[in-house]
Length: 133
Image 1 (cartoon, one colour):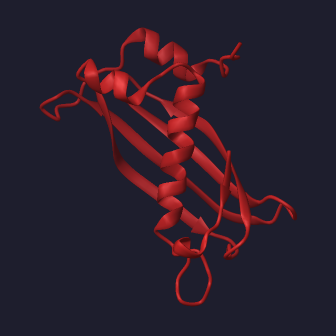
Image 2 (cartoon, one colour):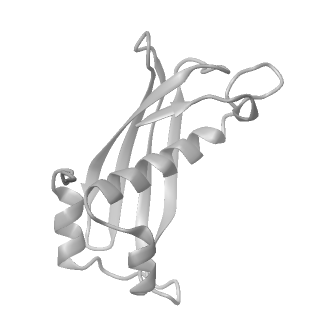
């Protein structure tokens, strides 16, 4: 997935504000899920939600206004009620490494109690992206 860096993404020095990388990770996870036929809103309607319980970021080089980043998102680990995603952000033109990180998400029910992922969702998460016709 591509992320274009706009002025609003940066701090007063023109460098991407550190917390925005977490937003980029969220967008990339949502796209990862959607590409596998998993709708976040559909899960919510069925009484299941993902909540982030742990996130890590390692800043390698600054991204700046006008850059375009490529976000590579992979499923790093899967449990009965959790998934961990690994994210790598690179500057599109040079391939320069900008940020590496991960996020562990737990599934919960409507009362925010940990709930197991259903087998169909687990299979979809671990499968390849679906082709669209």
